[in-house]
Picture 1 (cartoon, rainbow, N blue to C red):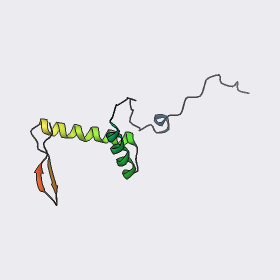
Picture 2 (tube, rainbow, N blue to C red):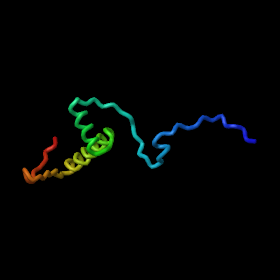
Picture 3 (cartoon, rainbow, N blue to C red):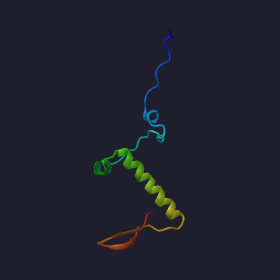
Length: 89
């Protein structure tokens, strides 16, 4: 007969359930009410979370930042205005 283990079970978090999960750091961000509503609307439209929308926005900003830093341009094209350069400062 085996003696019962006195070790406590490990908590089950997302990283435990999915070993390929990307580690995250919890942080707090202060947003205006308009920004919160915009992020919530995008999350609803995309069937995702507010956190996912914010993470994606950061990665897009990083991509644009790096492109501009390396001499690139960001162009925006639509039917109403044609193609124009998006100036990001």
